[in-house]
Image 1 (cartoon, rainbow, N blue to C red):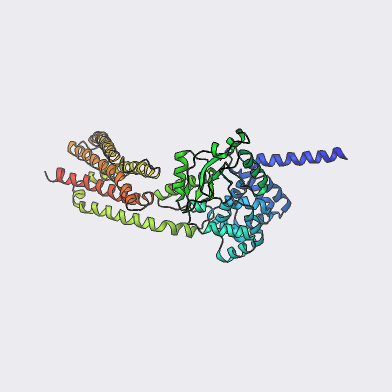
Image 2 (cartoon, rainbow, N blue to C red):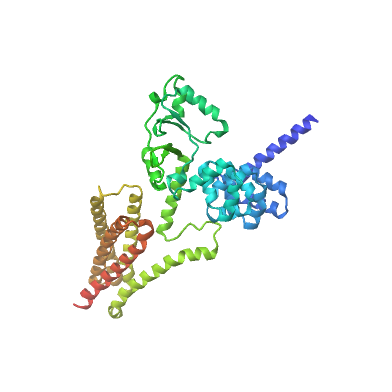
Length: 474
């Protein structure tokens, strides 16, 4: 009997391990075959099988799975997730998908799940709740958890106060290493889930240093914290999260204390939070350059179309403006058809070259590599690059046009237009983001449409204008 039981246990273990191997591909993305298994189990109403499949996944992979399922399947899956696991899943979800999942969970269950989260993640989840359900969930939570979440939500969105976790270890300067270690051990479940430092504070609770846990473990128990502590980089509670990420990157921080307006310790930010911010800000800038927002897998067709409409409308207006430049020279094009063939080349090359300069400039501004200290050398460098590339491609287009149309003067006009276009692209590509940044606008979100207008208009006008002057008005 004992042998049979052991065999069944071993078989179950093998089955769980097989599911874990099947769930993810080598690149840690969900295996489509595993998603199909979940769908099949849901279609059959096999709750036991669904629980078994979910148990094989990390919370981050469960969150990923939610994105591959339709709303009906998500509705069948969510009640099968235990509150402690649901907490981690909610922390991994974002956007419209998390809002949908939150609506499917009862307030009492949500209160239990959110209570399992660190304060920063808990506030983030509660912030996505509708006003009515938020009140129900907060009412079902303990007084301490509710007060902590309300305190976090009082800070501005995308600030250090919203990003920080309130759970933090602090100790007075006169404590010894032994006292600090005993304090950590005594905290038990009340300790932060992830921490790297004990912050040393003065009598007014202002941080004066930090004792890394690794240093505590290497030091004697009688050593004073004031003797072994290291300097800290304080983060103001109202600092923008993008600035926080810059500080972490610049000073290679793992964690940092967050202080209120009076300089008192109110929380900490750890590197795992910053990784998310860096990814979020990077994706935001990349999408902004294309004039789109992160629609996510839960977005509707109408919502996506509406979010892109206004950007496309602006682009239509700039395209009409560029076409009006061509209309000025329609008489010239009618007299010399070759102009219609060659006309798009200079504008297209200018647009591509300008985008290169613009992308580099936006990144340099985001990483603070470009500022008042080096702005003029950077501007002159980009202008020089534009001139050099303009000369190089002018030579290329001179040869191409000469071989194509056998007209030396036409080849000369094309070459001259190429120089003008690439020079204008370089100037616009560096000055537009600098100007928009100085005016307080996001250069990633605003520069592209202006750049396209400049490069198209200059490209068309330079080529057709030079052709009219040189070829048609001899």
